[in-house]
Image 1 (cartoon, rainbow, N blue to C red):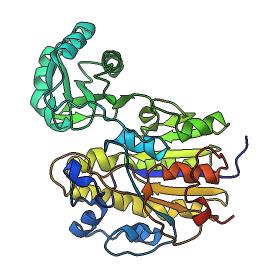
Image 2: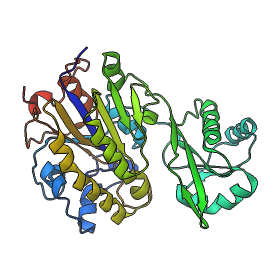
Image 3: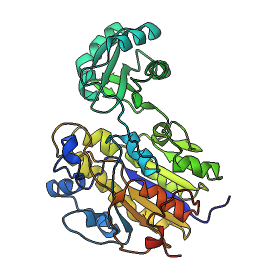
Image 4: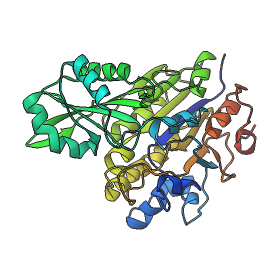
Length: 384
């Protein structure tokens, strides 16, 4: 099957645009990542403003893109369920979480199969727990296991003590152990190094995710002959399903440059996840860092938009909120932007709120796949 258009999804991980009506159930009332960021910093996001993202702030400034804001119907507010729902698969059940740490049975089996002791086994900030337990790990070789408010089993290890590939094998062992009712959403390798007396996480993180519970839009597109490029951790999030090729990046600048490079490739759909906003700044509640990274995107955006060809459609979106001005260190239950731009997209149209799956419905319309019952926003924003 041939396709008349190329789709480019530009996802800013954690860039929420206001609390959902059910945010109180998650303790997130008042969260608003973008609006609070603008109010508390002095950055001027000129190109994002012209693009139309500021319509979702107190300023209500329309731009050249069209779309609306999406709400999550999935039970969680994590990366995987956010991405899966954007691709048409909302998650109607909750994955297990472990606010008291993992059961002894799980830890003992993990120790037996890895032949290494476990230390930690509690909810913790990833940067803080390696400060706390890094020396003990280096001395003993014990694995640092921890979790968070999300459904994750995270394993931290120093690369000079446990090589990255060995750490990945331990993650695969954990993935095999964690069956229902302990089927956590993601097992995550968190390698680090000790540099000048400080414990620094490296760029060799890897997620071992469950597969989406149903066929995603990406899988459908691939089955119909489409080629899908993931940039960043997209392959990990979808457990490699529906991904033809994946490019890993180490810095925000490299991720942006990969996206620019993809404009000249032949992929039907390119999906970029810019994770820095979430992991480096949102969870760490680093307001200035978050704003500075967004300014880097703002400076880059105009170059991308000016490079689009007639058959290429650019989509700016997010998966959940991670308000750096909010309490705690967790994600925040927020609406996310979903804005389309290209020569075939009408300008400055803002539509009613819809569930996150509406992105998949709209892409299905644009690519004429006729998979979803809903037509999405296609007829309303697309110039036929």
